Image (cartoon, rainbow, N blue to C red; front, side):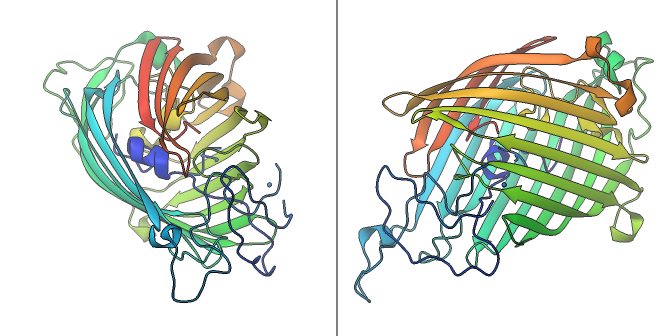
Length: 419
């Protein structure tokens, strides 16, 4: 499905890229040269999760990102580090999943500091991705995450268009368990913008806006509609638009491979006719994750995610289980409803020669309301994965995971950590 939250591997790289910084009004520290294996820390302040999500101790600049410039350099003379402002990261992404089918994606991103002398701001990212699979699914997306003015401002812009062919199992836990589905073709485009302003003590606050124009149709191979699947939006173009608010607290020491700190993120999106939507409803999301280091090469990360929908939301904008890697091992959207939660943990171990391994496990569920969650209806998932470091400077990993859920297993390939 074409959604801001799920645009393939590029969103895994671009989503939730924020760091903790000194309190608003504190003067920026004097630039200092970064050492190869040394983490730089700034003045003490306080705590995506992952956009947001990826995944509390106070830090003031990235752990795995060295400074571009060097203090004390002669004016007019640029070091090689200063001349090389950014790094390019790109990879082909083979895809095989029950949701998308089998195919190939391409992901490319350029990571750099907009101002080489601004050591407080995390590196900004400009990226693009494309995908095509044997089910006829395709999409193209471009994105940018910008950090500037000593990390006082953060902006995110994502735009995409595509066609997604997938199986819709209906709404609710029972619909997903029954296994009855309608083959759907969903086409359309989407645009998302978010702007954040730094507040004291690592807090960020700002507006967000999104607009989507989508059409759902039954594919030719869908001759009948199971009684458990209600599709009131079939064949009708749905334009949904929301003006919302994001509130974050972030103390991670790296946007790509955090080894300390954590992140809290809350967003509220109000879909209203006055801002371009053809229906009125609300969507709320809450995320919290931390990334404590166990040793120089070991990290134990954990994450909580919750979602709630109010009003007559379209079927594609309900809480979708398996989206954004909340619990791996499930086809995205097989389980969907008006309430959802997911809790997971992941052990990460760095190996020599750029390699690494992970093991993860989690549990969650969907329900029409909070009071309807039941222990015997929870959806567990677990798995293992391999990592290969594409960019040593920023510690950006190529990720390959295999996970098993209640209905089978699935492979996951992407860039950067799952959260």
